[in-house]
Length: 297
Picture 1 (cartoon, rainbow, N blue to C red):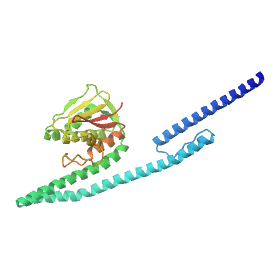
Picture 2: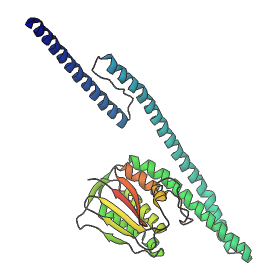
Picture 3: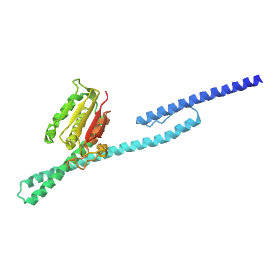
Picture 4: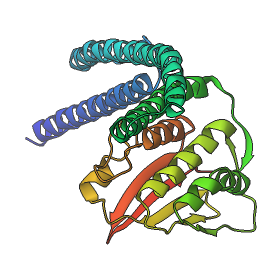
């Protein structure tokens, strides 16, 4: 009787050992699939998942994932191609519109010098305003397509966030004065350096500050900390949490904003920030709009 108990115990131990090895191998295969999948989704490659396991169930799982991965890669390539085509089309259209718009502005200048009735002068003023809005929109479309395309191929260089932020404020001094805004700026004495695209970063800062000028009621607080986090805060009672969540959408404008708003400024800022490996977000709390930009060291 004892002999059979020992035999049964031995068989059970062998089964347990076999199952343990099987489980270990399955876990290894699962880790392989997870690692391969993460690598394929992060990189632009056509290489599919390949695992060392010979277990038919795990290989079947890998094959199923490969089929979906192939669809995902095809969709990504179609999106990238379509996005490039759209940007090229925007660039070409906006460039083609520049010439007739310049001619229209020239003729409007000539009409301003002619004698005209009060009604004609009023209509002419409306036409000039709409033409200027269209000109700005065309210019922003051109800048959007150019900046978001060219910036990808421009190498990074050492930049000092403190200095570039000061330069951007100086460049927009006239705009801030026109809107009766005296910004409160807080920066550390320590120079905060990063490897970034200088022109793209200037565009990010200028677009955010320009946006603040549109919505602010005369205040603007800008803070840079030693971790490379820049915040732009201003009182914006015309906004709410819903509209704040859409500020980075292309062509989105708040109804109460200036008629000259194109809805591309913050969209460009987001695209450029993400291209440089940074993060940008907007928060609305008790009437205060805060745009936060972060470039990790």
